[in-house]
Length: 101
Image 1 (cartoon, one colour):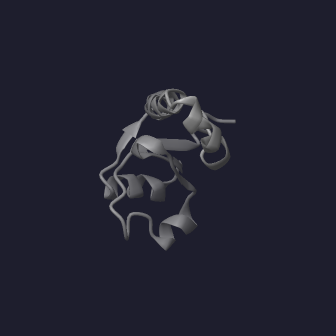
Image 2: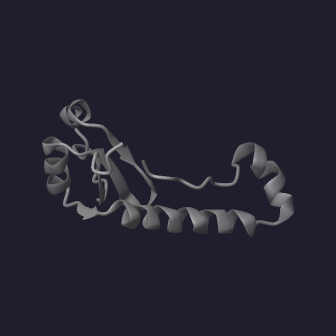
């Protein structure tokens, strides 16, 4: 698989109009923690990044941002007292690590 089929960026979701129906039809998009967005590398997705003042990142830069947030979430969960973890396992399990495509 080619390394350049995705673009990675950091952009703040501004609500309505951030992702339009046309955007969803024209390219694949996935939001991650740390305001990281992964989109298929198309002309339309590049316009979307520019329209939303996205800052382009390499895959490794984007992965580092996502990993830092998830590591902190896991650390916070690990620091919970055991009495709070037991019910949390059923309701809110330990956050998983995320690997970007």
